[in-house]
Length: 68
Image 1: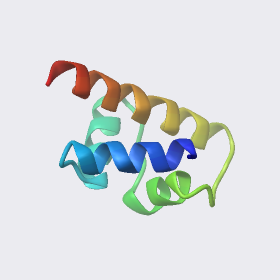
Image 2: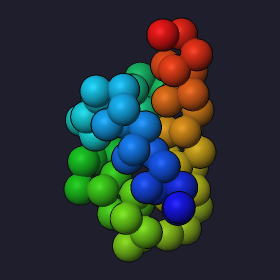
Image 3: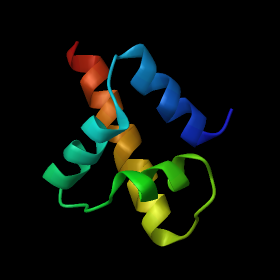
């Protein structure tokens, strides 16, 4: 399973949306819109920005899951 799919599954299991994730990324100083996030999660856009967003998204979800 790709990292993007793992993140999407984690969002579903935690009853969170991609919009929630966009807001959490913004709180950490990473500005990304929902279209770009979707492209990163689906592997349609790659590069340093995608790597940063994916790593931070995973970190945000890991922190959320450990707090619940």
